[in-house]
Image (cartoon, rainbow, N blue to C red):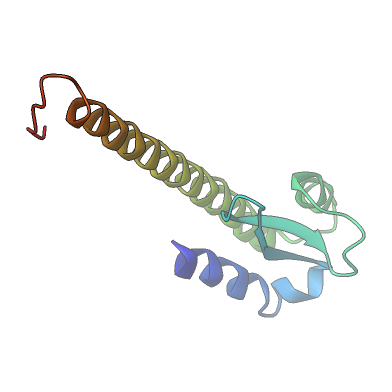
Length: 117
């Protein structure tokens, strides 16, 4: 997933896209997840509004508009996939802890049963 995200950022870093004043950057969250974000080159603004502002520019050539549209669709899909994977990872870890706790309770029960699920 990280390689795909990096590839999208790398595409945006090549001319003529790199000359448009915005870029795609990888942003790490406190939860350990990485997302693709639009940023101005001077880092003064971030988010989809940066992309929207450029898309609304009437002087933007149609081929660049199409390329930016495809990059935005890819960004949205990759961020969704990253979010789902992170959520599944958290849930699997939570499930594992709950199972271990349940097994510990069973082992400490008065019957002394030591079976595992």
